[in-house]
Length: 106
Image 1 (cartoon, rainbow, N blue to C red):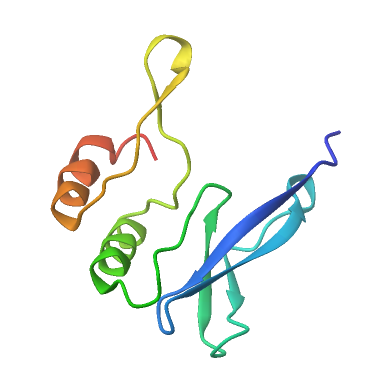
Image 2 (cartoon, rainbow, N blue to C red):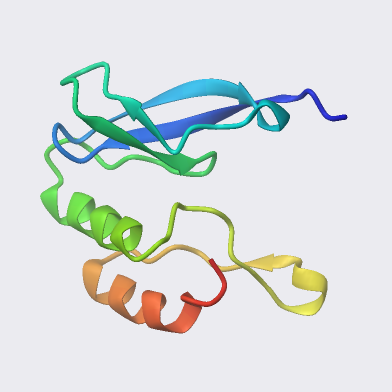
């Protein structure tokens, strides 16, 4: 049984802050936690999430849009033997296309 700890990123859409917590995956990982900054709900966006700057409202809108459509910044694998990964979109407009294209792969 794998007991390797992983850092998971949590993000709060209310105060636009992110923080990491360490978990052993076999012990279970919460989908939400209380935000240590504002007390709101912080959502688990996975190991690969990189938060935008607090003031970058366009990027936070994109992150929220992806989250609302079921994307938690997990790797999306394509190609032979699923070795290749798809980069996440840079803009909200790209995110709209991304959701349509990859909605069945999340």
